[in-house]
Image (tube, rainbow, N blue to C red; front, top):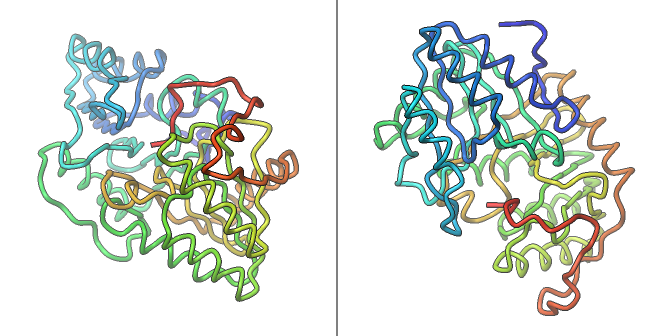
Length: 329
């Protein structure tokens, strides 16, 4: 594995290069499971690995929750190139996982899709993991979804899976915070997590919530997200809106010593209906960089008074151009 590839990838700071480099290191096997995959240089990198004899398999989400099919062109490109490709397991309403496994010895777990805008316009994160047990488990999850088989992850692996253990493990992470808890999440559509955040504040944890405001939130999810942010504010939790970039990442940091990064939004369907993957991080250097990025984004952000969810006229926001293709699943 190239030492030049960072173990933490921050978007848009690091861009597409480290992901392309990761794919290029594959010598034997390459497994890719993605919600959306359209970035041309990464498509070329995958085809190159296949042409160099690497056993390459790609699994793509068939359609978004709204029904549109963003991956059809990529699917046909890979199929024409002879890449072994399948649609994701239909057992899940959506496969929102964003993972790449290289040679069974390294895996990328990301919040970003393999699409140009997520390397240039959004705040997102990716973590390289090297733990053999975690690599084995991610591979097992891939194989189960590839064959559309039932599968459950092991307990205590340090990985967070939907629709298996994600709500419980995220809740436990919040419950363990003692002094500080920073969240950078675009959606707040789960009462269990809302209750945990309020409880953390009530026991004296300094909680900061960096949201994305209206951007990328569907009309259906506005009710819960705006209401949740308003409730958090009433309990004395500081709520800001990201201003320097569109927010797509999903990050929690507790006590400046542990983090949770993954594909799952704070959302009932993300916990219960979708295939999602995240990981806990305790590496001091990685956590420190995540905290620096959060602190920078917080300093660039503004206090956010979420609008009344029942007043659509107050929901319009003009800080970013509307992007109908950037909707939080």
